[in-house]
Image (tube, rainbow, N blue to C red; front, top):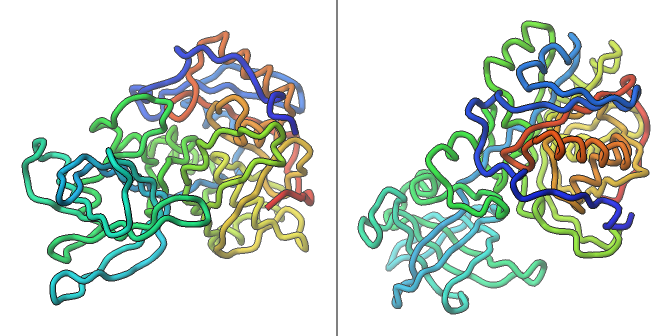
Length: 382
């Protein structure tokens, strides 16, 4: 599909730089493709728009405070590391002892190129500039030949918890289009209330709208809930530069679909209940694990996906979708267009702009309803 077919005019003032005052306080644009209607609503009214028995599926990934601001050993020059993906456990030699470390794929920058062997020091965020002890360290290993990113080793000076040091020193990796540094409120608000499994460097933003009180009301109504894990990577913000989406190198994301979730989807199919995906990350995980032998169902398991969903894709699992408003000419907008129709979605986006909706990660949301649960077979590039 041509990239320019996913374009729309977005005034800069429509980009939300901060979340709504209340987690469930955003607006909601309801798109019903079956009847070709748009309805202006709110997240608080979501309860009235989700039928009892619906299976709601969330992404329980937890955002890592992956942005590290520190200094280079020896020169004291400023350096920045943005963690992208955890590769596994490792160790590093300090003096005559071996201490535990973690190997990460990361982006890095400093006044001079970061070379293999370079070491960086990071202090706790609360420490004054240039003061306070180092709580986390990094050593540059090499530059990856796959994606040009750095492989780095993270470790602590006293072999204490790396997770705790990362929480102390790290900043929340806010999307670049916010054009601001992270603030205290982002530690909570750029995280869903059901975030559990650490590993994402971007939030599954549709889930940011769901407060615990709203989830409780949905449960009391008879809406069921299950979870998947998909660690959102920086590729979710990667602009499409190719003229055709087929030529765009899709980013890799790790997912896990538990057996309990696979069984919950099968049960929903047996009772004719719809599957409502909370966000495009859930769509990517479920459609990547679609069971072709059992239409509408998924296979439990873990893996990596490069799935590209664009108009023409036949959805195999997802029936309804709650999603934020996405960037022009992006793969996420292509996914939403595949789900509800490109022209219909772009008309909805134009209406959202005209009616003052807030866009992107901290913005408002859209609920896309469907006619019926659809256990259809689908194909995609993966």
